[in-house]
Length: 315
Image (cartoon, rainbow, N blue to C red; front, side):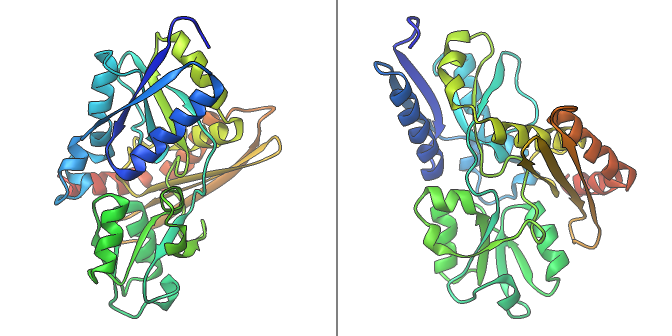
């Protein structure tokens, strides 16, 4: 452990999943650095407070990190632990993404008390999701379903399902597994049917750019393969200027020194879905270059027009 620091403070949202993520990183850091005391500072963000409006209309998932970032910039806390699919593409001056940790299950999960899969849902069934990406791909696959917004933390969403408000809901498999709700997953949805969001399933650690001693503490948590995959996915999203709350998907898989990335842009109704994919050798290229190339392919297919229409609908 470095001599400069004996206590490290984590800024965390107070949802069950956010606290699980912070506790997980706390335990990892304290195991790596005997004598280091890690504190978790919980706080409620604007994204947690506004639950009756779709995220896309109130600023996207960046609303979940602004208060955390402010506390780090004010030196009230030192790091923040994020689900990478919720992390905006750009960071405020003075902050950076210091580590991408090992990825959990990156796929979407189908959760229902009465039906075993999306295919088993009857015509007109109500299915809930907070994601425009999931909404678009689901609408393309099952245009006969009634897809309704679903906000709140994982426990709240499951409670709404159990209360009969939905026939089924779609959540990230990683969050369910981390919170001990893996048994609620009736089926994981293949990437072919629901391509995941950039960074889904991975945790990231944000800190002040100038804090080299903190970055040294965090460095052992960096997972090389997960980092390569998520960097490619985020480069795709960044080139499309996509943010978190638009129907963009990106999912990379590493095979030795080869990296394969699939990208997707969809219209809100799912009637138009653009796809592109490619592989590169990590000996000859970097993950960001792969992400940018897939984004350029999608733009040539007309992704910019689709995304412009999505943003216009959110105003």
